[in-house]
Image 1 (tube, one colour):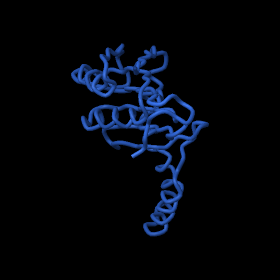
Image 2 (cartoon, rainbow, N blue to C red):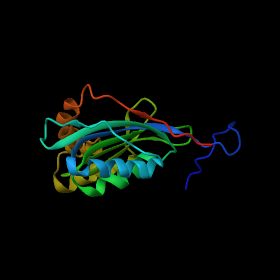
Image 3 (cartoon, rainbow, N blue to C red):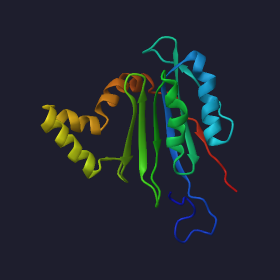
Image 4 (cartoon, rainbow, N blue to C red):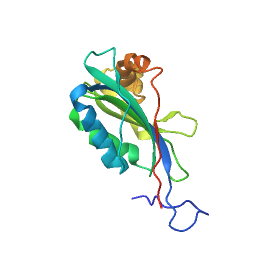
Amino acid sequence: MADHRGAPGAPSGARVQTRGVVFVHSCPRALASHVEWGLADVLRQPVTLDWAAQPVEPGTLRSELSWTGEPGTASRIVSGLASWGRLRLEVTEEGTARTEGERFSVTPRLGVFRALIGVHGDIQVPEERLRGAIARAALSGAVLEEEIATLLGGPWDAELEVFRYAGEGTPVRWLHQVVS
């Protein structure tokens, strides 16, 4: 397991911090307070989101939250929220000197997509995953372009795009965690 303490040259005991954003694209009204509690549990501080109606799916809400925390926070957020099966969300985490950036997309139909993100914001696909896509296409007759699109999160992007557009103009709230 990686040590998330200070980077080379950092004071001893200093914690590496990163930041990210949670985009809740679609949440049933009845789960809104549970989402806030789940985020508060991971971020170790109270969370109150500014919810807005999600016009794409009546009866659901949308919100955004920017956060600062230790590397791995995005993964913990997704682990805490994705199992409910009724949320559409994306969670991003910026890379640090010691960790890769990550992007997660979650939909009720497709489940969880995870991608490593390079320093310029591009999805990084490991060699073995590419080799697997080539092998699956060769064995099953699947179209290689579709296999690669799946590696890049294409099906998740297609499902979430209409929800992203509906969220334009939603205010972003910054939540900073102070570590002593």
